[in-house]
Length: 395
Ligand code: TTP
Ligand code: MG
Image 1 (cartoon, rainbow, N blue to C red):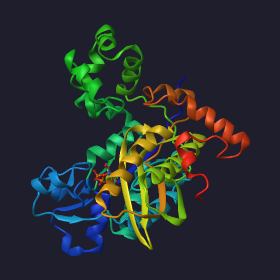
Image 2: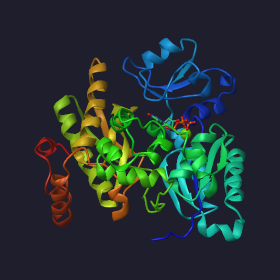
Image 3: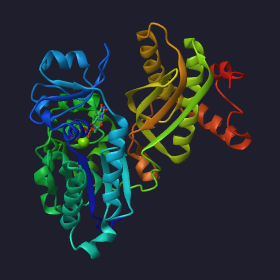
Image 4: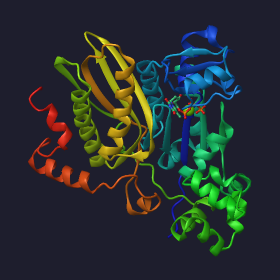
């Protein structure tokens, strides 16, 4: 079926956390700046472009970053500050369209098809967004414009930093063909290697490959999907009702928790709650954060990425538990007054066409589905995992 032409914008702030730090402390400008966990097992959240020259990257161990860039300025993340600036940025989006799909604090898709009449061209809208972000926050956003999400995101990535690029339909091949296949959405490490093995290295190679070669490499289903994507054909809608940028749940205890097993049981309970809310909204998260408050008021936040986006309780809990355990083991006398879990970095998954595009989930979700149904009918907490029962009575 032929789709009506759409105008999609992808906006992604440049080196977001690090740029906020430079904004607040101009003496950092020009220096390599790394925003990272600073403990022994700390991980890099992001590095400014100066630090990237040394090979420092997001998700790298801070110890490795220090080896590569010993003279860098290392800063502990200030999530509240980044969230406040993110609100200003999303306020700009709301001035050009109500159809906003936030992917993280610093990244969103906008469907501006209906706004074209008012603003004349997608470039005019993109320019307005970029300029307003710059004026109101002092930060640079990269802006990509095209007929769908795939190409709009590619446009912002290719033009970053301080990017501004529109890809018109007759330019699609010129941009896509030379790209390595690994850059294509849905091609992870395993698929990339399989494609290399049959001699497919670029998107142009993939376009020319015959069916049996492509099918042999990645299977028929993924092959068909890849052909479509490599044509630059992506029908995913901008999902505006992706509810919020994060889903969180936290609990303050009357008595401090002093034993890891009990803390884990509470954590599992929080994971069930946020997982159920994410599943009810049909969104999958990339990032899991835990909030830990030592009595009386020292609050810590730890976050990590899930191996693949998800909303299954066991997947969320696996990440959250590791974060809790690492924190717990680093403390000589760990005690908790408050414990919370937050999901963010959402990927909206709705509609049959869209579901078709995604690979097999990491965990069997049937048990979550049954649990959600029973809790929906009998009230949250009617059915909980066995580990959670430990929390009963200490509320
Ligand atoms: P990104 O947009 O992926 O990165 P960035 O904005 O720092 O840099 P770029 O110019 O390449 O867009 O992520 C946005 C913010 O999210 C980033 O500043 C820090 C945070 N983040 C993490 O905390 N952990 C991670 O693994 C990644 C990828 C990002
Ligand atoms: Mg960014």
